[in-house]
Length: 182
Ligand SMILES: CC(C)(COP(=O)(O)OP(=O)(O)OC[C@H]1O[C@@H](n2cnc3c(N)ncnc32)[C@H](O)[C@@H]1OP(=O)(O)O)[C@@H](O)C(=O)NCCC(=O)NCCS
Figure 1: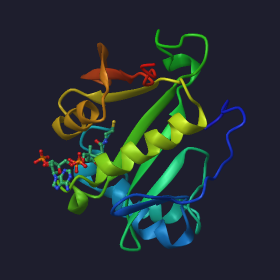
Figure 2: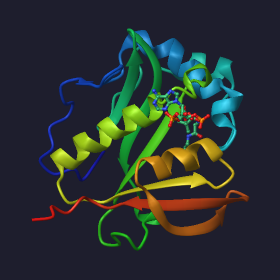
Figure 3: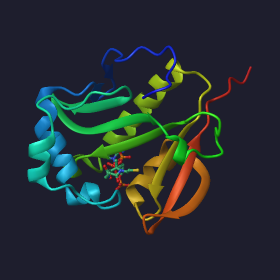
Figure 4: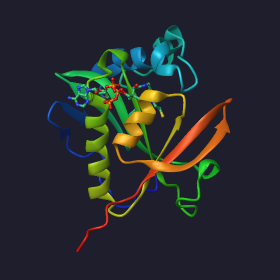
């Protein structure tokens, strides 16, 4: 994540009731290939990538970048959660002057339906709110992506706009920082 000011990266691994959020490591490579080659995972995000291409191009230690967390359950990677800056081209009116932070999430299909994505995203959003208090976070997803739409609502994102892109209706939501009541 660029333009992140004074935030230290990586943070210490974040532990939730069931999960650990941490930087990618060499041992995650096979699971990352599973994730990116999965037709179910790719269904609403441009489709899966060919497995042989992934085997060829992915470095031995998967790319680490600020804002990218691997999510681990019982020692094995089950997905990724990312807080990234939207580039100039895709800025919205939420924070037109600065690339706002955007949440993204990808989980292996066998980990769906257990609340892991919600648990991991909530932890990443808490980390972000502590690191950069007062900053909103945006999220984009296809409206046809029911699971993602339900997750966005559960995490407290509310609709900003709907628009057509890549031949499908897209939903953009924002999660505004909590204002202390007193
Ligand atoms: C989007 C995605 C992360 C959602 O995953 P998910 O597992 O459905 O999301 P959650 O973690 O919120 O889990 C919710 C489900 O877990 C169930 N659940 C079971 N145990 C639970 C628990 N202990 N706590 C909370 N929920 C629990 C909920 O009832 C809910 O079930 P439902 O889907 O039948 O309503 C996943 O579908 C995915 O990776 N998709 C592909 C990538 C993608 O499209 N990403 C969006 C890009 S913008």
